[in-house]
Length: 268
Length: 331
View 1 (cartoon, rainbow over the protein chains, first blue to last red):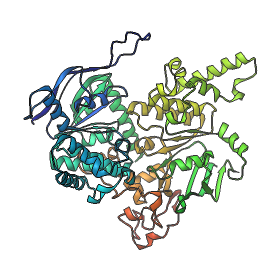
View 2 (cartoon, rainbow over the protein chains, first blue to last red):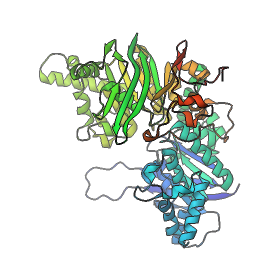
View 3 (cartoon, one colour):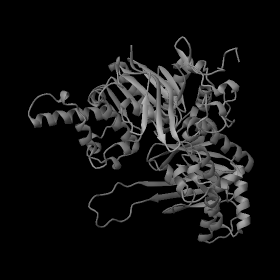
View 4 (tube, each protein chain N blue to C red):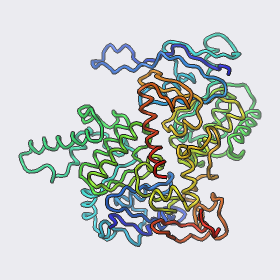
């Protein structure tokens, strides 16, 4: 497999020198982390609350800058200056936010929401943009007519599809999703899972996602990253990690999940 | 005997387009000492049922039911004071979003101490009562698995993590030692370890105190690990109910089957990355409800008769309402 992206000693800490504050703030530091993402693979990030999962996702897609360390791309990039690389990162790694309903601008129609990244990142003409938007809408299983809809007119599942379309529209190679399935109902969730699997097959995307739902993680992830307290404590292939968890945190998570599944199987 | 018995509960909402039936003849009964699960997707009216039981419905909703009883007493015929008395001691509700349902301007400790019923505090001077209240509160906070009681009790709701908030809500619900605990999606957004803790707590309370629990939610993995029976709700209609083992082994309604299939952990034989079985489409909005069986447009077994609402049928204690149930020969 070919490596797409790798990060070396990626660090982020939000502690700013606070000269006047009396209380000592609790420090949270992420990293230093080393990780790599390969082409067309699905990586799941699991871990407890406040383990820095969302922070890692944001770092990967360039929404926040790391305080130390760097992210490297193993592809032809458009330029070599720092600004060029950052722009490249923001186009190649796209993010899907946790609650799609809250991340869509309620005052814009779907067409405008989807055109925004194109306006900001490419110099396509209006006609080209509209064509691309329609193309992506069809790709995620919506209709061309949805171009003129406002977000509130769509159901949960359709909004999730729009969020997916927004991530896809710049032809990225990696999609980072922060709990894409958590807010969805079971039947819509399965539809979204199927959509992700299909898009991955068709476009050869890498998909990094955060999830609490170990059932889905086990089903779609190739590789799992377990985080605890800002550190990566274990990584491994899904099957290996579920069968032979090594670190305590992983053991706890996996055994908690297995105990639920086992109880179910004794029922049936 | 059924603790809570609801039959043909219909709830109508007054909108610009006339009265809409948000709940259409929903049935639910919780027996003493059992854990009953109420399963449904968002918009199916789960939370409306919870609010109907707790009596917190806004005035633009109209509630009718053939029967709605609590230990044999008719809830609908009661006045507000009697209703409140039941809600104070017998039924406790854990609402969905802890941040939204706690008072943001008061510390958590004060809120918990306030909800300790006066019977528990005993007689004495006010400082003795105060001390007793505090003791009960701390004990409860420990019981639900929060170790750092001092930190949590002095915090305001926005300062705590959402899973601790969720646990705290459960502590607040348990303070009056209720006979029935209604938990509205208590494990949402929790990581696996915390979830198992909460489920164990529920199970233990159920076994040691014979607390009945109505577990509302759509986390089927959690539900199937602890519940005795399950009621499945779709768009305000109860489609199937019965003992959970039977429902899992032989779901009769197509919707129940689709729900069970949607959780990949339930199927050990499922190869990784294979597409999951789903129902096409999404849940209809309240303004565009189909007539008859509301699953109709999404159901692959639907036929002409499905535009009439199917009657409730039963096999032993397994109730279902479908014209063409699965696992039977007449279809």
